[in-house]
Length: 203
Image 1: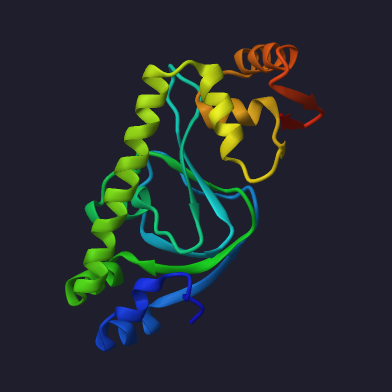
Image 2: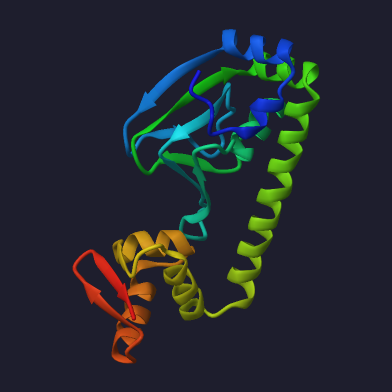
């Protein structure tokens, strides 16, 4: 079982670890696949071991808003909450890259959480982490100027040249392509960045 990206498993009780080994199945899914839609009820939980998954929400009145990006070693709270409560998922999930990982079904997840205090503690820690991230996102959208959010997003990226289209950046920040393109052009004129085809270079 290639789940070393999940450090909490080192503390998992022997009975729970044995149970887990017999109730997960490996998966590999290509880039651009919708794992579930907003409004679906999830029947499996993904444990991601490589790749990235974008969680986003949308409505009739706003563009898509990226809530967070799921990375290896993380479990999705939208996925988990929908499965455990058997209620509609509050967001959609799409693979940003090819992903690999494991799926565990609803009944097995519930059984694992009952038998393992370690797994329960891990679930609580997930909710705390994502709650803080989502609170920050809400504050950014409500109180920060969009050009400030663009600069902060660019500064968080590991490379100075970021491969992203204006439409993709608009999706990340919950805006429209037209507005994002206008602001990027203004920022280029002000010497904040350089625009390339399909790329943005921060200065």
